[in-house]
Amino acid sequence: MVFIVKYPMDCGIFGVIKRGEGSDRVNGDLVARAMEAIKFRGAGLGSGFALLNRESMGLRMGVFVKEELMNNAVDTIKSVMRDSGIDSVDVRVRNKLGGPIVDLEVKVFNSAEPSPNFAGIVNSINDLLWEDRAGRVYYWGGEHIDVFKGVGYPSEIASVYGIERYTADLWIAHTRFPTNSPGYLPYWSHPFSVGGTLPWFIMVS
Image 1 (cartoon, rainbow, N blue to C red):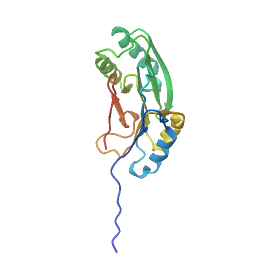
Image 2 (spheres, helix red, strand yellow):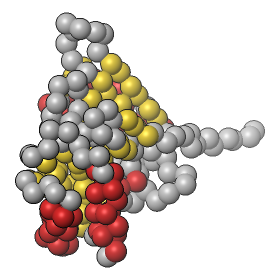
Image 3 (cartoon, rainbow, N blue to C red):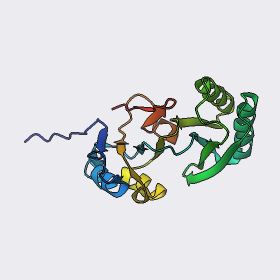
Image 4 (tube, one colour):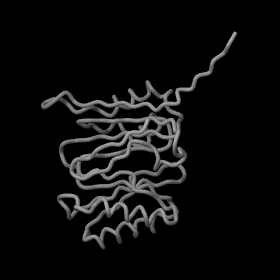
């Protein structure tokens, strides 16, 4: 008798979009339950959810930082923004993850549209934060996107962020089986989002 042990060694991806104008937005609870059905495709080393709405939610970006370096990271973020002509910025702790890692949400109040050089601003912040491994920007998607991710299975990330409380026109979710980059920090969990007014996703599986 031959026993074969098979590991999926692939990621799991789920996407859903509302039916059209006049239809209700898709509830996050449905997305979390769908991801639970493909939990076996991940390794518990990274999961995430991204939502997109047509209505503006304001220009924002997300940053994972080490808790003990959070104050320095906030100063760095505000300094780069200020030097780039963005002087009205609010930084708040959105969540505390294991590690210990803190999830910061950065809101820009004095810019109706993303700066033409916002990608350069993000790169400058990342370069400075990474000098002492303080953290990384993990999404910036204009006004219409939000990303929730971390190290763990989909149900764990959904619980941490209360995904069931959110509704969206479109959802993309991912559970990770790392093959080409580390899985022990939330920066490398998927999905990623970069862009300006029209955001887009990068999903690696």
